[in-house]
Length: 209
Image (cartoon, rainbow, N blue to C red; front, side, top):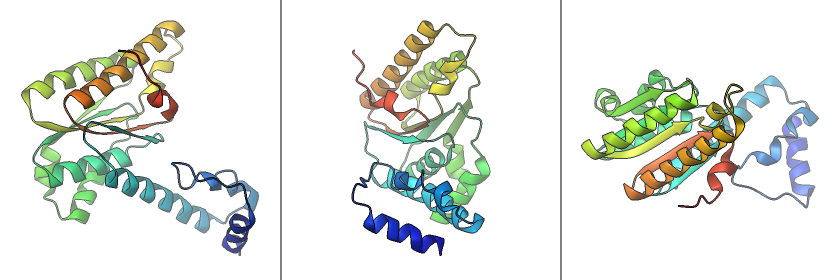
């Protein structure tokens, strides 16, 4: 019954504009329609699945795909698919502490990849502060010169630069430089890149060279 009313609402509403998030139109309607736990669970699973499928299909070398969120799944799935289908390594910088290797194993089995070979080619680093993330990025830059890296992934970057103990001006400057460096590396090294972050607009800004 709830789904019926949602469909009627969408059909009759004239000012709905689809954004890069296919499910954005539902966000404010979930509480309004008081969806049952089962329906909301289906909605959540579909949302995650479509995010992952869309991001993998439209990945291009030398360009960054940014997905709004805080969880690792789009990055982990992309890394498995890119490494599994190509000869190369992947680097993932995790600022959310959500990356789960068992999830990658399941993704490998779904695609028919050898999980041992694929996971061996995916390097994961975790950061709990902005300074640690910057250090990880510097190490990643050095690895790009010594190994054949084809994928760069990151989960939750901007939140690390919102530490209360950091000076606000300094944190913004550091964040801008970090994003600028990632863009430069992806373009210069012609990498596949997926970033999951709650503040996607920051990545869409143009940063002066």
